[in-house]
Image 1 (cartoon, rainbow, N blue to C red):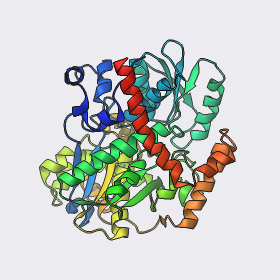
Image 2 (image 1 turned 90 degrees about the vertical axis):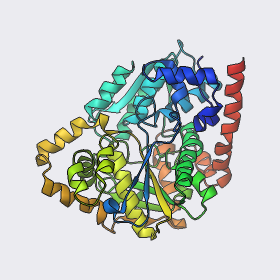
Image 3 (image 1 turned 45 degrees about the vertical axis):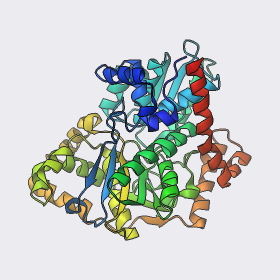
Image 4 (image 1 turned 120 degrees about the vertical axis):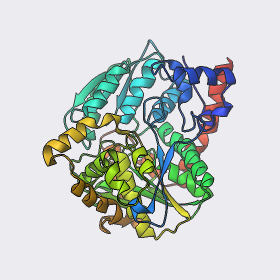
Length: 446
């Protein structure tokens, strides 16, 4: 079995032995080299990649800090949870290369991460993905050496993914790595993404006023819990599309923000720690992406430094723009000031969305300069609607919604669901990372 970095080493690559660090550095030129496992982490290049959005774009006094997942081996930070889930299953002797096939249910970036991690660690890997996801996602999965099983529907059709996974589970050799329920996903973000956020904000001399993340698997939002240990007043803000407002009003529907909004409350989402819910419009996310990707000249004419505007080309995917729009909306609602940063994540970059913007051009026509200026209003003047405070009653409803997916459909028990009501449940899963690290170190030394 192949074992890569510990959680501690993913947080701080200086803890990786020097010889392995050098191998990993050289492997960056060879994306399929397994040594890139040691490049999983926000600081693999030495610093946490990020951008700070100025008031000229956001209309806010509060800075919006966006961490960029593009430098991870697959171009998205979701490769971290894919690795973390697999390595913990290996420690539990639940899977072994050459004996088992890995199945990654996903709506995109986690599947791409699994397609990369599984073969690098010696496994045949299968990604179950909705058929309407971007063409680039399918190309990347196959390019990393995995197989694809396409299921009906789009981003919000996770039930159809689960139905296919249920069929695949019947084969004795298959092992399901389900990002929506595996708490190794939660651990990666609690320990690694939060540490990256805190380091960036500290380097800027700021405090954290809010951590904002849309829910796909609801892994990334776990970073907000850890951030609160340093900044107790910081709000943890969840995000979903108005076209599929599952937490907002038990709503449903299809949408086009790839990576989020899946018509269910995930098992690993600690809803008891979620302070605010913000909903955004998928069309505004698509058009906002095109503005940041193609509108540097317009942005420079609106008071944004030209070099900064040009640096955003390639930086964002649709869910990243979704997170930015929600961060602006949340900061306005919370009344954050100039020293209270809103921290969010650009999960991936533009490389997996050219086909999406080509489709937008066919639907709406190419973006004109006048349209680009109008789209600035999505950032500067967001609606104050579609906000929901995480009161005790609302959190209880969010928690109870898990019953329908996880108890009725996925085999969890009511007792397991009730256990998540106790803060000790989540603390125990946070603290498990130390034990996982110890066992990985033992495998390295053995």
